[in-house]
Image (cartoon, rainbow, N blue to C red):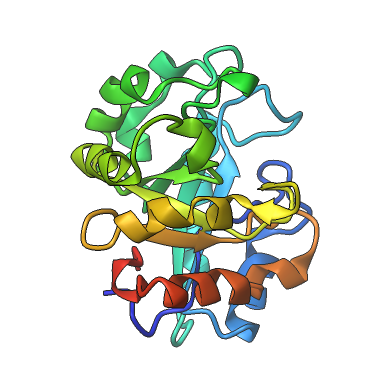
Length: 230
């Protein structure tokens, strides 16, 4: 699993704050030679002016699934991104049964108190009820797990069954260094323990759909191809 794939498991569409339709994202993924593309719109959060609502989930999933028909060599996945701040998302009201009909769920701002994200242990009930792959999106692991050795972080995340994203969006960096590069020691410790994904967090630039090169270079440098989620 993982080796030989070319994945982007983080993209946004007009269902939330993206500029492109699901069809445009999928067509760009096919043109760019990806093997897997996941559409993961912001779900039930006040973080953005327009977000995917629970009442739209069936329509959303059906549309995304239909776009995967006859896409030779490209698997199209339906997911959501959940803001873990209880100030912006009612985490207790999430429609778990509907979320479990998706292909994956991304959690953002876990252990990020600067933006009022939830601590990982506070999300235990939510994570334990989700049967689909659940991952940490654009996480600065150095800050989120400050004071904890990378090997211990790997064991902790494995105990929750979480995967971790290599997010290539320029926004997720510190002093010009991408979060995933800052967290190189953590990702190295994930080998054999924690699955990883690659995502570009595309919103406004359609070229970003297939711009996974830097993420894959990082994955190959650490020998983590077999740890890729897809």
